[in-house]
Length: 218
Ligand code: SF4
Figure 1 (cartoon, rainbow, N blue to C red):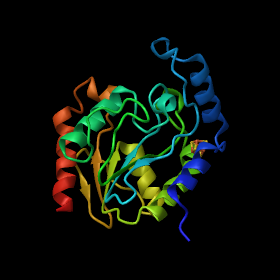
Figure 2: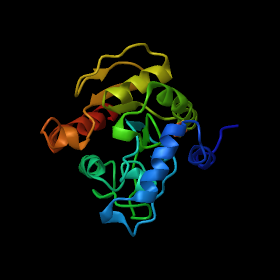
Figure 3: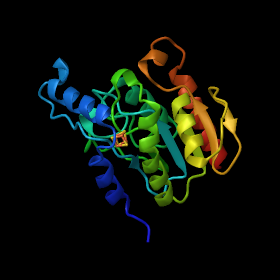
Figure 4: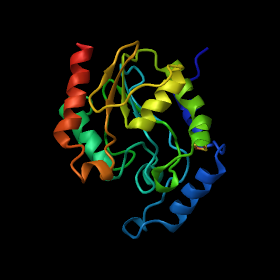
């Protein structure tokens, strides 16, 4: 029998497999950022979320220290999320362009969002062994999400995580690059501030990736 997604989410939230990451997340949640000092940080591993009947899987890198690690929902509460959800909203995959916190009314349509790692890493850099530890959760999500036709990999690490999960060998990354298969894969630069503030990834570029996903589904 298939494991319900909520059961998997519970297992993810309790995971302690990577001591370095768990310690970092807890410390960030305790110290907080001044702007969020009254916010009750999540501080635990962050499960994926979205539409369980989704045909589109979005794989990010890992929770942001003051984004998902604060709010408990992937890509929620930071600038990366603002960028991503605006693109999803413009292309009809989300009912709103903002993702501020759990319970804000956001609903994804046909999309499930997950990450290569579920705990915020120092400097946004999970170690290879931490990514390997977390791979089992992506595999388990895939067993539950039965309709995935397109995988959007946000950044090289997400693509590598996807390739390793599927035993696909090395896949070449390039923004907007499509890789044939079942499911198909499309790469995008990650909407990190490093990319968005330098103009490496613009709103239009990310929206075009999801417009391409929409066309691929039709
Ligand atoms: S990164 Fe993944 S495997 Fe490591 S502690 Fe967090 S949830 Fe567990």
